[in-house]
Length: 313
Image 1 (cartoon, rainbow, N blue to C red):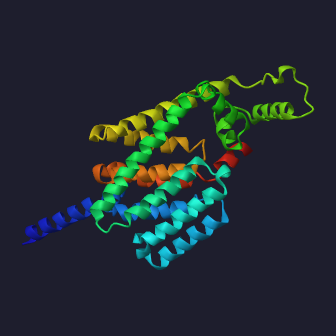
Image 2 (image 1 turned 90 degrees about the vertical axis):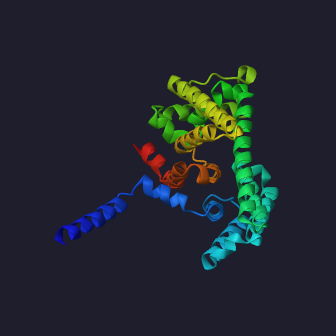
Image 3 (image 1 turned 135 degrees about the vertical axis):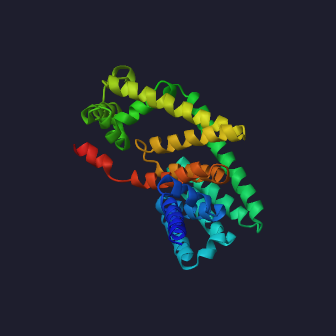
C-alpha cells in the first residue's frame, strides 16, 4: 500500500511539475492557440484606434467612446454598428485632413471597414474567410507596392533619403548617435540647408556641398537595401499561399517589426502589420502567432523615452 501510494504521489507530482514547466514562450503559444481569432483581431484593432489613432478631435472622441462602450459591454465588439462608427470617423478625418495623414492611417481606415463588413455576416467561417483574404491582400499590397515605389526612386536607391533622415529628422537622431553619428554633424547639415532655403542666400547654381559623414552614408545604404529587399521578399513569399513560403514570410515579417521600429517610431504601422500577420499565423503557425503577441508588447516598450536617454549621454 505504501509503495502504491508513493507511486501515485510521484505521478501526481510529475504531472504538476510538468504543467508548471509550461512557461515563457510555451505559455504564450498556448495562450495564442486558445484565442478567438475574430475577437482578438477586433480587440487589437480597437486598441490601435485608441493609442495610435489620428491626431484629430473627431476620431479621438469616437475611438475613446467606442473603447468605453466595449468596457461596459464587451459584446459590442461583434456589432457592425460599432465598426461602422470607427470606419466612418476615420474616413471623415482623412477627408478633412488628408494632406497631413500618414500612409498607415489610410491602412487603418481600410482595416476598420474590413471589420465592419465581416461583422455583417453571422457565420464564423464567412468572417474568417473575409479576414484571412484581406490580411493577405493588404500585406502583399503594402510590401510589394512599397518596394516597387522605392526601387523606382533614384534618391532612395542611392541611400540619400535615409542619410537625410539621419542628419535632420529628430526621430532618427538617437539611432544615429547609437551607430556613431555625432548630433553635431546633423546640426551642421541643418544649418547649411536653412541657409540654402533663405531668400537672401546667394548660392551659385542654387547648389551647395553638404559636409556629411562617411559613417552616415554607409549606414544609410545598409538601411536602404535592408529595408527594400526585406519588404520585397515578404510580399513575394506571401503571394505563393504555401505553408513553407508563408512560414518564411512570417519570420521575416517579425524580424522587420522587431527591428524597424527601433530607429523609426512609426508605431501605428507596426501594430497594424502585426495584426495582419497574427491573423494569417493564428491557425497555421501557433508558435509564430505567440511571437506576434510578444511583438505588440515590444512596440509598446519601444515608446519608452530611450531616445532622450541616448541623446543625453
